[in-house]
Structure formats: structure tokens, C-alpha cells
Length: 223
Image (cartoon, rainbow, N blue to C red; front, side):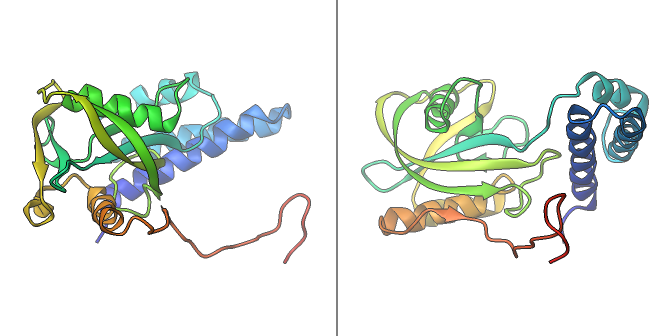
């Protein structure tokens, strides 16, 4: 069963996005008031499952009214010549994961993936293929934000392993050596697909499929 507190945080983020985006596109004072009410309720909802209380969250929500969309994050599956996969052990919770993180402004996802590998492991890698795009809501990721995970393949072109303040360990694993029970949430699906793609290079990139729903809009009536 999924963690209900995680679901509450995601709903709060969706409400915040609804309010922020609505405020960006309206000059109607009544709509502005309603969207600020939604924003306040989103902060109150998040406070139910967050370490911060509502009095701390409300000013944060009020002061950041930028349009909110899913965040782009990136992981890279790096295999060595022996067919082993590179993983990091996270410093915060000791779980194992693919090297990765959030993309920076001004960089392409593949570039961000190479940068994250360099920062977290000490290896310089060249991205070689896009393996897939994963939706954090659908792959077991525990995040209060809606994330799009770009998964790339990469190969080492230089560097040497290092330990940073983000990692406890950096190591290479054969498929039967992967610490499946100690993986960071959301990484199992991406790691398993990386192994599939490594063994079958013609496998098409992965993307999540949801039931399609084409509801009414301002320009479309009931369907």
C-alpha cells in the first residue's frame, strides 16, 4: 500500500500549482481571492504531513507564485566493460540508487545526467542513449513534488571513484548482486529497465501509459 502521507503531499502540490497558475492568468479580483484561498488550504494540507507547520508554509506559498509544472530530474545507468552497473549509496538514508538529481537551468537533461554522475561518483561519463522518461507518481518515488525522471545510458570516459557529502559508497554491481531490498524508492523500476535495455539494445525507450481522458475545456463541449 502506498504511503498516504506522500499522497497528501502530492495533492497539496497539485492544489498549489492550480492556485499559482490560476493567479498568473487572471485579473479578476474575485478569482484572485479564490486562488489565494486555495493556496492557503494547500499549505494547511501539506502541514498535516510535513515537519513544518502551517504558519511557516503559508508565507512560503504566498511569496512564490511562479507557475508550477513537474520538475525535471535525471538518472544515468552506467555499465562497465564487465557488464556491471554503477550505483551510489546515499548519505542521508544509506539506500542505493542510480547517480542522478535535478537538472540545472541552462543545461540539457543528458548534460545534467553527466554532471550528476561526476559530482556524485567522480566518474566522467558520456551519455549514449535515452532509456526512458518516468513519472514519479507511477514508479514508487516518494516526493512531495511531481517529477519527470529522464533515464539515460552512459559510458565512462575518465575520472576515478570518490566519496562526497552526498554518498557513503560508490560501487559496481552485477545483476545478481544488486541490493534490491535496499534501493531508494522509485529506483527499482528504472534499474530493472536499464538491465533489460543493456541486454537488448533494440528495446524502445520506456514511458508511462495512463488511460486517456479528453474532458471538456473552454473550447470543447462535453465529449
